[in-house]
Image (cartoon, rainbow, N blue to C red; front, side):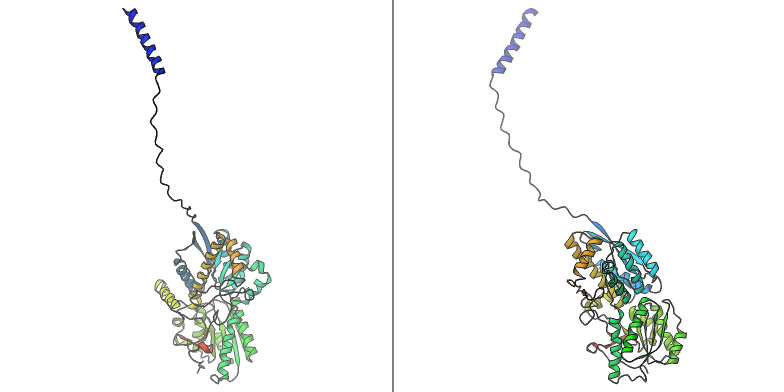
Length: 438
């Protein structure tokens, strides 16, 4: 039985395989092409966020620290307005404290260049600090903008090697002689009109023993001598000195018609004015810089009456709005000469960064320097949106100084009464005429 079944099974399997091989193959069902995926529009990748380190140089400690407060506040306000960012670059500030000392300032600047890797610098208060830091900026090729160091020593150093010292790109305060002449013109105008009748045209010159103090003293001395004045004394003192009775008693004995000088530190300037009143000095006094801090009248009181000074003012709605915001935020009274000018300087610098990025696509020492050299030093570009001056413009003939004159960079001459400065010169701006000291 088993013998018959097995062969039959084998035969059946063989036949099934043969028939299967001969049968026509089934046609596969047509496949549908996959539905086309909806493609999202391609977006260019967002530019990588980078960091740009800048150095802000100022007297954040020392005898002029009050000015440093105004620098810091105005810089913060300007950067807040752009959210501390230019394009895809976040701005990181390195605060460089000059301490009102040239050697310490140069050391701090070099540290910012080497360790912090700043790519540009902005602002500065003291002339002697500017002179020392120019070499550091040149050594590390750091373009520095709107330093207030006004002394003609900066201009002379710049002119001695323009390629090297052009990294001290532009000054935010012109050389003293370009501004101090207004004092002389105001005095001569009052004398010619018979408003002031000094017995003799005699003057005593004074000032802090710094590049700024000696530059201002030397400039106004020559200008007065050219106008027929006789210099009867010339005294310079350390920047931090606040004891002036010996100098002032000497001046009182000489009894000059005019005492003319300057100080960049509020405690020094106010002490000089108060002590001049105490010793009974009858001379008309020029204290260039008395109003460089907002609280000057709190420091001097009625002793400042009849004093002559030369500072800009809060003359536009934008300037007045800034002053109100500054005081509300920081609790101190801003000065147009410190907070106002430094705010303008920061915004000028920010516009330089924007223009550089638009032209070269990146921000670093090389591109910032190149754009400024090609556009600011040539006079092709100027900053016209300031709150203190109408226009900050530089030309090959004025560099590193701005153009000085009406419509550009100009300070009126003021005379103080009861804490208010009244413009006495130029005549087209005058609010009152000069009043002789009784």
